[in-house]
Image 1: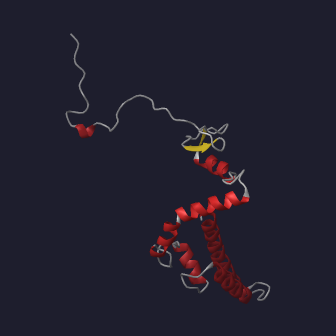
Image 2: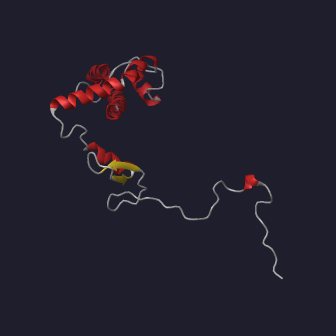
Image 3: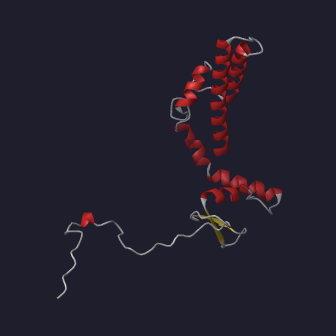
Amino acid sequence: MSRAKRSLDWGFPRWRGYGSSREASTVRLCDRHGCDEPGDCPAPKAPHSRDRWYFCQRHAAEYNSKWDYFEGLEKAEAEERAGAEQRANAGYAQASHYGWAGSGDGSRSADEMRALEVLGLESDADFDAVKRAWRAKAKEVHPDVKPNDQEAAKAFQTYQVAYEVLRQAEERREWKG
């Protein structure tokens, strides 16, 4: 006589895991040779083709950076298609007026806000104003202007770091948008 195996859930369904099946799940790997990441980003193999590559996020970004949406179109056709897409998305551009766009809205990080404060700028300053302020302040305390002055060297380094923080943030914004 064999003993029955005791259940581990004790009658409480919440103790069972959601989707607690024990089968192995299949994961599609990236189609890029040698990549072991999951391939969850489809990309077309050719224009007007239903065949897709499945890349990881990094390789999909690399593949799409070389993709030309207007390839094979005449100049007039490309302009017409671009205009049609802009008309279709015009509602988003109009609605951006109501969105967050100014300073103090979370569009700048705390590091950026501190860097703007170091350069003596308002929180809504554009990058051209950042460049002008950095150059003006750096000229005042540059080691060539004030040699052997430790305070000036320290101030110059502070301005340099503040400018680098803001420059990198501006590059990220340009890359995203």
